[in-house]
Image (tube, rainbow, N blue to C red; front, side):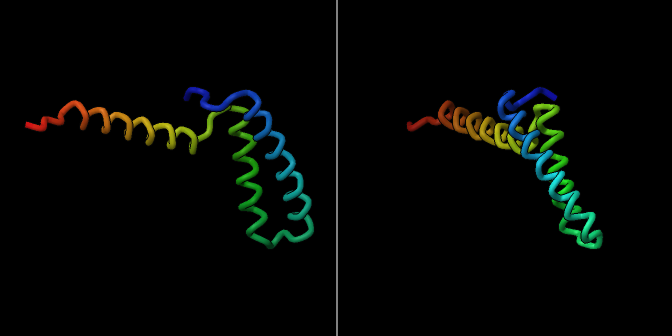
Length: 83
């Protein structure tokens, strides 16, 4: 697992993740029966984890998709024979 986001991006993700996690925790104390708060807490914790590891799965998937598209385009250009 190679880092695919920068340091500033990681710090921003951690800051937003901790802020959301604290807000959701305060809301969850008042209304523990709300499932939407649990989902939001999981998403905020995921942002904190992305910041700590400097690895974003969505960025990885997007980069991999772009790389595959580029390779298939190169292959089509090489095999094209107009005669």
